[in-house]
Length: 458
Image 1 (cartoon, rainbow, N blue to C red):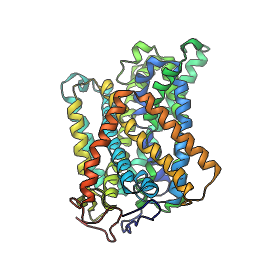
Image 2 (cartoon, one colour):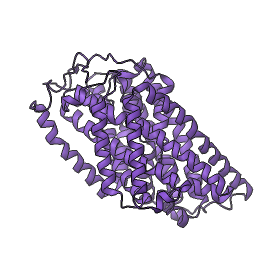
Image 3 (cartoon, rainbow, N blue to C red):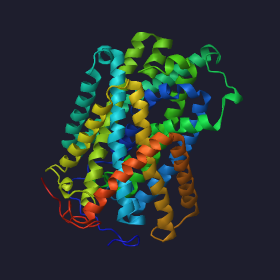
Image 4 (cartoon, rainbow, N blue to C red):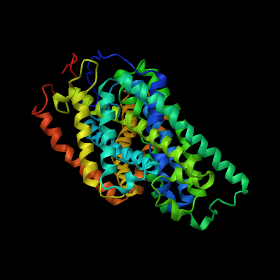
């Protein structure tokens, strides 16, 4: 049995290491800048200036988490990210529960990203919103198309990620420029007035829970570590650079839209950034931005689909998930893991397609955020435990930052609300039987914690 002090054997990776610094940075930025910045203004509209303070706290918390992940990745550059780190610190049971919650957050979150992408397409093609079932078919079609891209191999998926990351930055720069122009034109008269009496802890906390959704993915480069070139250096650098860059973009763009658009119109918008541009720049420009927003969301979906396949694959290779998911294709793609995750995603979308696109996005985003927070909290605690047991060199800076990251995770869990937290806990509980079944060897051919020494091909 593996203890917290024992090194967990990790299998040799024979698949080509296809992801360098720029691809990893694009994975981090691309996964964070997806549908979040384009859809969140509608969810944040009721909070006004509280949303700005929520962003500031979220960016600070995300940077603490990024430092924690960078430090852990430097010491343990292993595939699986949160799963590998928590298993190192606390053993296979905690590692499994963290991996289970994180894996759930991946395919649940992908449902929200896909919904956001199609929501923006509806601004260009109104029939998507009007014709019953149309947005459902397009959403699922996009998901399975990108599953196919990722099954084709990590290098193709990485190339798609770099291209879509470059494209998605163009409309965000345009929106930020437009916002500054509007503020300068009327000397700030269009801004929602700042009143200290409107600022309250409950509003900031609720907004903070939603804003974290947009920064989920800061750990993206840690998950496919086995496919990263020089992971000890590449993963920490990509994680920190991507988080700082994305945080600044979000603060400028999302806050400007919330404060410069009437709240009543914004909160019912299916494409808030496009509506903002249309309001100040004309309908044609709004449609162009909607197209870029859809590209952005599809690019993020591509990166998250990569992770939703890599996570169960890493768990299976570690012996805590069914062994058949550890099989790869000849080009190193975990085909079966991809199909399983995409299958669950499909069921979730089918179960909730009757909701409006905005309502569906907000609900799924909260559930995915909650599931991710359990993993984030566990990783912050893992950094403290590994330092306390001298598994990694203890430093005052990492200790303080890990404590702040843990406190931030707890604060955001409170802000997510009881329904989302209870659902997240329920999803965790559902995972327990799977752990005990794999411990008994019902699904795996190798004991928990033992990686396979040779690559299994399907």
